[in-house]
Length: 367
Ligand code: COA
Image (cartoon, rainbow, N blue to C red; front, side):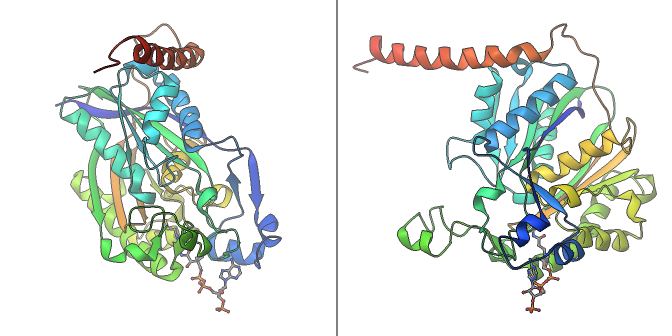
């Protein structure tokens, strides 16, 4: 049975910074309150031209290049997002087209802030089953488009960004190990975007009542999060046959530094075992774990051979944890970099659109 190794990674962050000071000019809040209650100092906000797929593609290209593969080597693209560009087509398909990933299946996965853990597990299990070899897993969000900028309870928390991992099959032991995924839909109302789906399609009423924005009961979510983080970590450690002392680094979902501190207390671990960067990015939902992981690599806190735990929670309610032995790139078979693929992918997309029009004109008109 092949192992699923994490062999490439990339992230994409919009340019525009929104500080707590900036927010205090929009809603009745202040830097001190936000820092004390959440640990957040600033977050990044998507520019008009940025979308969940454009951020996702940027992160994905970096991951593909690091892994030394080509977009055409991908068998599967899983895009975890709570802010898809449309109900359908899937954002994963938009990304597939922009990458020129001509051999990949593509689908979106919706598990809110736990989504990256769910998506990594789905990708890893597809590799373990032997059905695919190369999987791109993306977490991408443009949450700023769903935030009510008059609601100080929520607008201080969220930010935009994307992160991507490449998973590759190898006979060498390592990579993704024990994983746990949990859900409890009875708590669904604590964190939701009530309208825009089939329960409440868009109408004048839903728009006037702000039902397309994020609604949250912060206290309930906080209570839930502090309960499940340590528990899920312990479950993933046990499933991997490890001891908690074996773990080099825990990369938690970045929602609130107080939630991460509670998890550290629950696990009786020092806080420096945890990667924390919520101060600079806010809560980027499903993108937060890959972004924090990449910063851990860049600051030398995560190295090949290390045992790492990813742990998250979010709307649904969902939560989960994934244990991995950190790998790094496998030896590449390609002499060419995926860089040259970027213009080619655009040409390929235009070509396919033209061919579709021509096919419609000349063939199957009466079919
Ligand atoms: N600025 C200033 N004051 C604020 C404020 C803001 N942005 N937001 C709320 N307040 C006020 C409240 O109105 C309340 O005032 P009152 O006592 O006069 O009624 C007071 O601050 C305390 O509010 P409360 O909601 O009890 O604060 P809290 O300590 O629970 O912190 C959260 C609020 C949202 C930061 C916290 O509950 C939290 O982080 N929850 C988890 C949210 C989360 O992670 N969501 C995403 C999950 S993936």
